[in-house]
Length: 354
Image 1 (cartoon, rainbow, N blue to C red):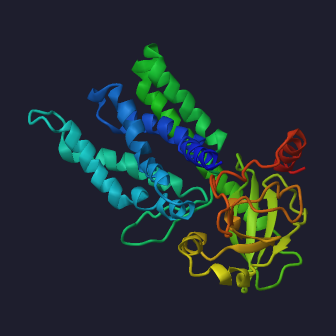
Image 2: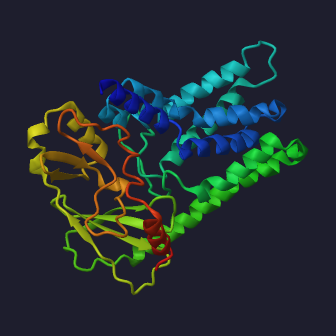
Image 3: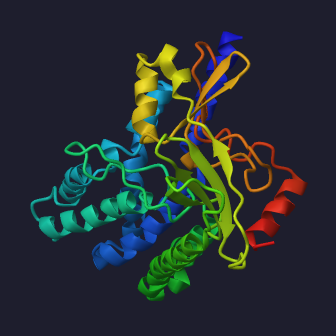
């Protein structure tokens, strides 16, 4: 039994290192490399662009040596800071400049690689995990809540363009134009998402909410940027959740679900290291829930399990505070739990405002 638990835990960690957002960084990095790095690098620019733009996620390896709660505060921490981007850019530049007769200009190369790495960090601020851009000098995590961590519409164009760049030799003469397409379309997409988010925020009506409740987070629901998940927080820390599509008619009323914070449930566990990590990571927006003898620490910003369909839905992120319980795949395990053909059909219709 112990062997099976260890195997499943390590398998979960391996799977967590290879999500679609890693693919996004690889293909977008290839396009960026073609545009940013020196022309004389040829196709090496694609490879080193993909490598440099993906390298901040090297912190995922630490999950093999840390607990689940430690992973939360380590991931997208120091490795995703501009400080580390600067240091790594010097390493990449030194690699190409190691020959004293090198025709590569060290300073220009370092700047190019800093842009490649730093853009990864900036892109990661677009989803709800949070990125410590200014670590180790400032521990604040930045999240602009514009993209779900896996958004096929964001990834598809740079993916297709990267395939053309890598696999289609006859298109190489137009490689720069192809790479620009793979860069500009995602930028335009983010701009469109921002406009849609502003529309949704303006149309969320606070019906039946206390006057003290304010919008704390508005973030995309899974795999799209049209159905938005909102969290309202009141002065007691209690929260209200709701969903609204960019296609909802203005007169459509929002339904809200109430979740008490229940801070007293944390009292027996408050001095533990994992709880301190959870409190730091939650940014003070959390809910404690009790199911039988099991106490769960929930972080609402990661969404709900089919919350757009079922009232009082459970939260996607739930951490078991009871000793000995499995917290592997902490971020991923609730994302598609309970999905089937019927729920997918309902979700599709809700995305389109039905």
